[in-house]
Every structure is written in C-alpha cells, then in structure tokens.
Image 1: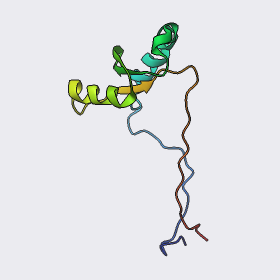
Image 2: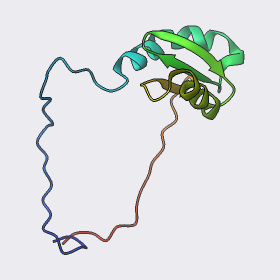
Image 3: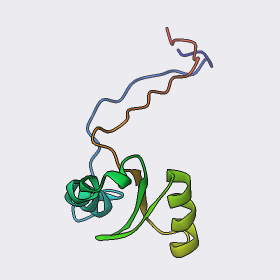
Image 4: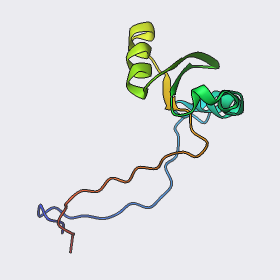
Length: 103
C-alpha cells in the first residue's frame, strides 16, 4: 500500500509502441540539434544562448531559452518544436518530491 491507501505495484516491463513506425517526440528536432551543435558552438557568441528548431531546420538563435520558446509559439502555434540551450556540456536538472514512501 502506498501513502494514499491504494495498492501499488511497479510495472517494470518495457513500454511497447502500438505502431513501430511512430517516431519519438522531438526525435527529428533532437537529431537536428546534435548535427548542428558543432557549427553552433563554433561561434563563441552562441554559447549559452538558445536555438529554436522545427523539424530539420534551425529557425533562429535567441538570447534565452524563454525567448526561443516564446518565438516558437508565436511562429508555429501548438505544434512540435525544440528550444534548447547551446552548451558544450548539457546541464542536468534533478527534481524530487516529498512523497511518503509506500510500504
């Protein structure tokens, strides 16, 4: 039982896609980011800024990630795009919650 009195079991089975032709979210944009990253890093002025990517196209470079996200929504609406910081090493963020452990 967990903290809310509900039976709890962890399902560790791998997630299976119903359609193997389905792509992962932002897969194309992430591939574009990794392909273009060396060129983006070649210009020192880009370090720490954010890039906006839609599909296989770099749409622009912005001062902050917030600016890139805002531009993405203004240009593309509610469709998939990527706004990511231009860094040599990716920043990792860790999140935690204060949950009562299940017993």
